[in-house]
Amino acid sequence: METELRPNVMKRKIYQADASSDKLFMGNPAAVCPLVSWPDDELMQNIAAENNLAETAFYVKREDQYEIRWFTPAVEVDLCGHATLATAHVLLTQEGFMGDAIRFFSPRSGILTVKKQGDFLMLDFPSDIFQPIVVSDDLIRCFDVKPLAAFKGKTDFMLVFEDENQIKQMTPNLEEIAKLAGRGVIVTAKGDEVDFVARFFAPQSGINEDPVTGSADTTLIPYWCERLGKVEMTAVQLSQRRGFIKCKYLKGRVEIGGQCKLYMTGEIYVA
Image (cartoon, rainbow, N blue to C red; front, side, top):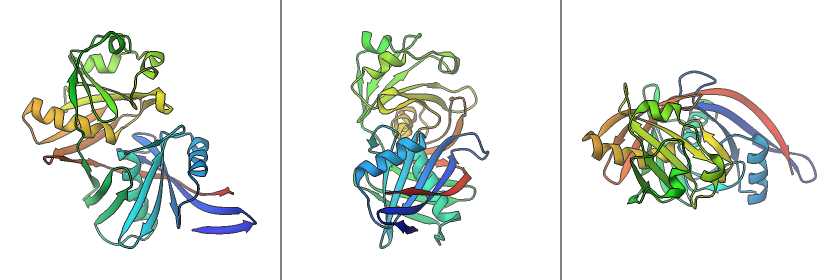
């Protein structure tokens, strides 16, 4: 997994996979770096910045589970769904994991499990806790359409709009979004052919628009469960790359299901 080439320089495996899609060049690309021990945070942040993807996941095997952390090009984040899905796919298809259920542990988010169900990988994540807030001028300035309602979760704002077409056509004001005190902004509406649609913008975290955002679904799923009166739902994130998920609300936790396609395997050389 790690080979020393010369003093202080190591060769490490790296993978890249497209998550929440059954086709390459769709869904959300994530890098996955297997490790035998944790390096300095600065090194992981530099690797993530060099990869220049929405997320790079790093993991270390600890007995019967895998400790996992996630970095955008700019910051470490508390939770990332698509990079966890990509990591599970790498473990199952490239790293010799035997079984149908993988147990991850995040120092920031606790126990996270991923189960294989046919062609889908099902993530079991804690649901977000969010509260309604005033649709303030600061939020209105972020988009060219006024939201119907606004909410604030642990890390993100969520704005609800009238219909799917507004989500497709809206233009974000990234400068105004970057001023908000949060990781980013989820925009959502009831879907035409699926239960709900969404997009996610996080310029303050180094991601102007994220193609597919599993952590945002921890807010979206409980909201739309209550709004639609449905426990099991389907959703599409309407980014340019698009991503499809099937999901379920589990009372305090959510189940997020997606497919994954391996794009690349390689090696990196770092101090």
